[in-house]
Image 1 (tube, helix red, strand yellow):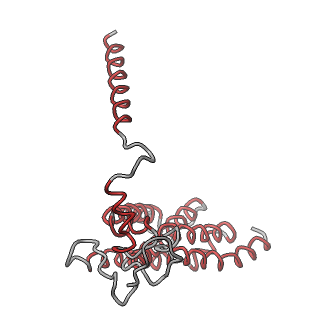
Image 2 (tube, rainbow over the protein chains, first blue to last red):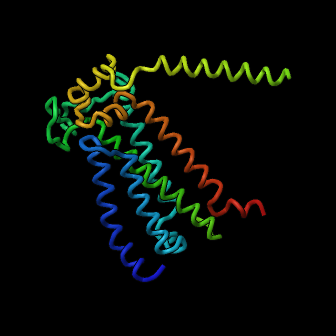
Image 3 (cartoon, rainbow over the protein chains, first blue to last red):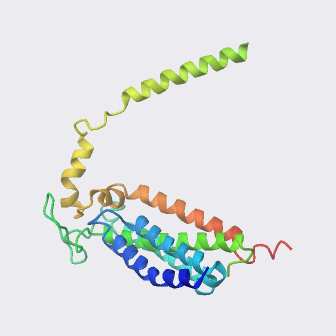
Amino acid sequence: MSKIVRTVANQLMLFVLVFGLYVIMHGHVTPGGGFQGGAVIASGVVMLIVAFGSGQIKKSLRERRLSLVESSGALLFILVAFAGIGTVFFYNFLVGSRIFGGIPPTGSNPGDVWTGGVIPLMNLGVGLKVIAGLSAAVLALALFSSGEEME
Amino acid sequence: MRQFFAWLCLIVLMVFLVIGGFKMIHPFGEPPSAMDQYIIDNSQKEAGSNNVVAAVVFDYRGFDTLGEATVLFAAVTGVLLVLRAGAKKEEA
């Protein structure tokens, strides 16, 4: 693509990253969550692939690193789920504790990020997983269609 | 002829099943069932989450989300397994 498109995509990627991380970390307060925020960031990666070409993006996004991030996200999700197994699988054991333990008042209220128990942690795990997974899948498909291969 | 009657019977049966199924659905917007009302009342207390959808997805119905994550994992694994470098070289 032309230099204008490349420059604009370069500047816009920062805002896409910030907005995606905001959607992921505020998943328990506002609409959104891990899947949605991860999809936002993965569409930013698609924008970069369109602007710069998949051969250029291949140099900075390695398959091994993406797999590592995706697997660690899945592992975080399952570990948090297993951590509550003293009561039951997927028990929200962090409500009322020191970490993300705030309890919002019942009814409508402005909301606080430091609430939700295990829900923010699970949002983070799913978010990492979706970012890396969708980026890897899209990059592999783009490289395949342009005749190159992923490293 | 026999095939025609078989299809006719099948279509009539399907129509009756579909109509019966639609009649049994909980009507939209009616007074909520016990389960919805429980989640709406207690998600802020029990899950500490203002977003009731997030509370359902990650707390009350966490197991379904685990399945969803597994589907995504399998899809990405399949794409990378088929399309990454080295998949072709072993064949040649």
